Amino acid sequence: MRVQVNARNRGYDFDARPGEKLLHAGLRSGIDLPYECSTGTCGTCKATLVSGRVTDAWREAPGKKYLKPGTAELLMCQCVAEEPVMLEVPKFVHPMDPGTCAPQANAGTLRRARRLTSDVIAFTLALDAPCDFDAGQFVLLAPVGVSGFRAYSMCNFARGARELEFVVKRKPEGRFSDWLFSAEREGERLQVFGPLGKAVFDPALRKNILCIAGGSGLAGMMSILARAAAEGYFERQSGWLYFGVRALRDAFFLEELGAYARRFAGKLGITLALSEEDVPASAQREHPQFAFARGLVHEVAKREMAGKYQGLRAYVAGPPPAVDAAIRMLLLDARLTTDNIRYDKYS
Ligand SMILES: Cc1cc2nc3c(=O)[nH]c(=O)nc-3n(C[C@H](O)[C@H](O)[C@H](O)COP(=O)(O)OP(=O)(O)OC[C@H]3O[C@@H](n4cnc5c(N)ncnc54)[C@H](O)[C@@H]3O)c2cc1C
Ligand code: FES
Image 1 (cartoon, rainbow, N blue to C red):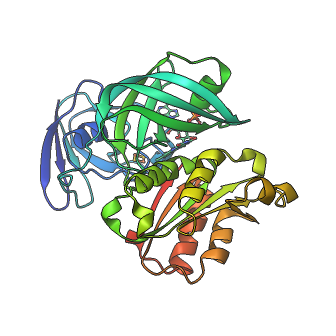
Image 2: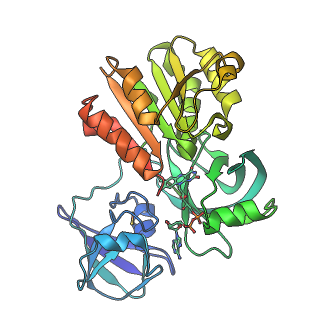
C-alpha cells in the first residue's frame, strides 16, 4: 500500500505491507519518522490523515491523549493503511543517516528463560535472521496470542547478532509479563521488529559516560558496557553506573557488573542505590567492587557526581517517574545540554 508523508521540510513515499504499522513501514524504508516508545503510549508519532483509510489496531492506546479530539490525528505506531494514504507530520523528517541499523521485521525462538529475582526474568531470543543494532537500542516483541508489541532493550551487544538477550520485569497484570512468568516458554516463537531507539552509545563519542538505571532499565546499560568494554573505551574515558533498586534482593547481574568493576577499576565506578532499605552491613563485605548508598537513584547520582559533569554524556532508562527525575537533575543541577542526555522511558 502506498503511503505519502508530508513533513515540514519535504515529502516521502514508501510502501507498507499488508497489516504493517505506518511507523514500521516508514522506518523500514529508511525514513526517520518521529517516535519514542513505538508502542502507543507517548504520542510522539502523531500525524494527520489527509486522505485514505486506516485501521487503528489499538483504540484505547494511552498515547491518544496527545491527539486533538475531533481531528484526523492518529498514532503512526498503531495505524495500518487500508488503501493508499497521505499523512501530514508536523515535524522535520530526514532520511536515516548512512550506517544506521534500519529496523526490519524478524522472528525468533525463546531460549534459556531464567529467573534473576522474584520479579525479573532474563531470556535469550535466537533470531531467524541475524540483526545489527547499536548498544542501548530496543526491539518490539509480540508472542502469539498477546495483542500488540511490547518494547524491550537488548542487554547484549554484537554486530550481526544471532541472539538477543533481554530482562523483563514483571508488571502487575501485564499481559506479556504474565505470559512470560506464568509458564515454561522454551521454544515459543516471537515476532520481532527493530532495532529502534536513539539512546545509543557509539565508541567514537570520546566523552565520559554516566548511566542511570532504575530496575530493568539496567538492560540497555549492560549493552552499553558490553560495547564500551569490547572497544577498550575505559582506557581513555571514565564511566559511572548508578543502578537503582528497592532493596539489595532486587538487584541482578551483580556477577557481570562485578567483573566490569574489577576489570576497569579506577575508570568505571558502579554504585547500587537502594530506595527502600538501609544498605545491609554485609553488602560492602560481599560486594567490595561496588559502592552502595541509600536513596532514589537520581538523588544518589546527584550527590556523588557533583563536579564530574564536564565532557559527559548521560544515559538514563527505567520507569518514567525515575527517568523524569533523572532528566530534571541532569538539566538543572548538572547543566547538561539535551543532546548529552539520552533516555528510554520504560512506559
Ligand atoms: C523503549 C522501551 C524499552 C523498554 N525496555 C524494557 C526492558 O528492557 N525490560 C523491561 O522489563 N521493560 C522494558 N520496557 C517496558 C515494557 O515495554 C513494558 O513494561 C511492557 O510493555 C509491559 O508489557 P505487559 O504486557 O507486561 O503489560 P501490559 O500492561 O499488558 O501492556 C503494556 C504495553 O503493551 C502495549 N499494549 C498493550 N495492549 C495493547 C494492544 N491491545 N495493542 C497494542 N499494544 C498494546 C502498550 O505498549 C502498553 O503500554 C521498555 C519500554 C520502552 C518504551
Ligand atoms: S511512538 Fe507512537 S505513541 Fe509513542
